[in-house]
Length: 377
Ligand SMILES: [Zn+2]
Image (cartoon, rainbow, N blue to C red; front, side, top):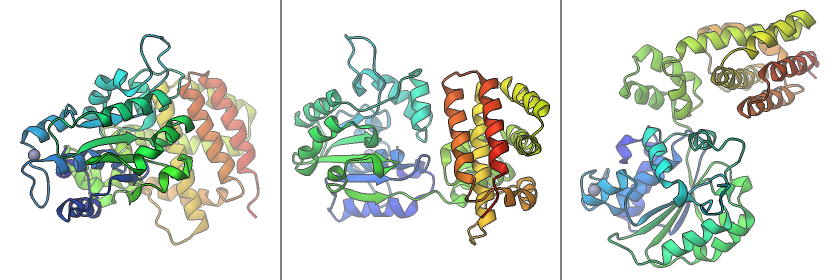
């Protein structure tokens, strides 16, 4: 993966390139940014740049043996550790190597993929992914091996927040005093769940949201037409993964908007028969559609709250959404936005776990009905 393959983030690219040019590559760095901002592809492109045999001032060459191997994730001195589900079999260990083939496919399909998509990709079912102490032992083993060909041996740890305490503690010493010519690149979304002793040993690379303009250009480079790209870029919240999900789904987007309006109106009106009918209607959509609708509703609630608070922050609405928000935003305020967001989030979780959708939606509608009636302070 070259820097040129990554959407936007020019400042970060420049910073990373300068560390190589000025020979001040820090041995443990934490790329911190929300999902879809591109932290993982940036870390991979950085690893490629560092090991490229013909790099220029702007990028790796993409053609030398190291570049070719790294683009296939088959470079012997580039290692990955990432959360994996328990295997349920005593023969196979729940470590990254067991899932490596899948991992390479996942990154190839969409380097902007998120944690949930990864778990779905490996068909984790109800189990969560984590990085366990067996993985830490593997990391130590791999980094003690002699370097094959590379100048640097690089370990990319995706989502270190999924590392349990034992696993973290085991790595502390190595992160603090790594072997010579060894780099740790930690790619995290949320630093709160990472033990402070790890954070204090890494240099922070803060990855910001991707600009709307860059998302728009990025989508067009993938063949999305200009009008659609512009529309999607405004509502993707700097997340290229979300932008990709919306692509080809603009009909769904309009549909989700109509359903969102219906959901809010029906909840507010509080008529039992209508509420039950709507739960039936939403409950019979496909599961992917239900999840997309719930994510959409979460975004709408956030944007309406921003409009309600009138904090001078930009809202990101399409024309229809903005028109509805003119009147609706007064119903979303700090006294109820938390409970509404939590309700939608919980519904998403239960739908992903195959709960009965009609019951989940009925529950959600009832909670929404109560929450929308909470007065603003
Ligand atoms: Zn190269």
